[in-house]
Amino acid sequence: MKKKALFAAVMGITMCAGTGFAAPATNYDAGAVTVEAGMSVAPDMQLNGFSGDDKTRPYAGATVGLGSDFALSYKYADNKASDVGMRMQEYNLNYKAGKNTYIYAGNLNVKGTSAASGISDNRLQVGVKYVAPAGDKTNWWVGGAIGDDLWRAEIGGSYALAPNVDWDLSYQYTDAKNVDDRVDVKTRGLYTGLTFKL
Image 1 (cartoon, rainbow, N blue to C red):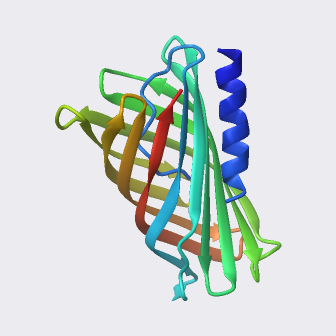
Image 2 (spheres, rainbow, N blue to C red):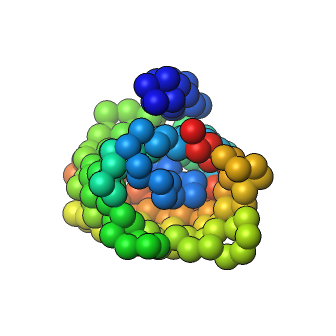
């Protein structure tokens, strides 16, 4: 188990050089590790209502099961429009509240890059996701989160390419107002990638 956790941490850090919008991890057994990585497809980011030449950007994340229906997760998303970028990082404590229901609470950090350097803000968030099978190899999920001047929504599906590898496709929307008391940030778009269950 220690090797799996170390491998997941290294992979997560490596991919972040490239949140998290893959199929939600559902195995919270102690030592269970899920790693996700992918790209935004047709993204849109707005700053104070201005939308620029949006770029396809990477996302990555990892979830580590703690046991007793708890897990820790980290997610990273890089958004860019023209010469302005916003990186979003999430750190959450997750809890399996029912057969298909998962709740989480944690911190969302929004940090400006390029022309937006110097902008940084942290938001507490609480959220819920509902994950259910839609066939033999397919799952779907829907979720959302709220926080201080923050709300998020997500819907997606996954297909098992192999016993421990899923292909994911989702739509995600984030609205964070008054970031660093300076800017309103909205991001939305399709995200596609792979989830590895280690």
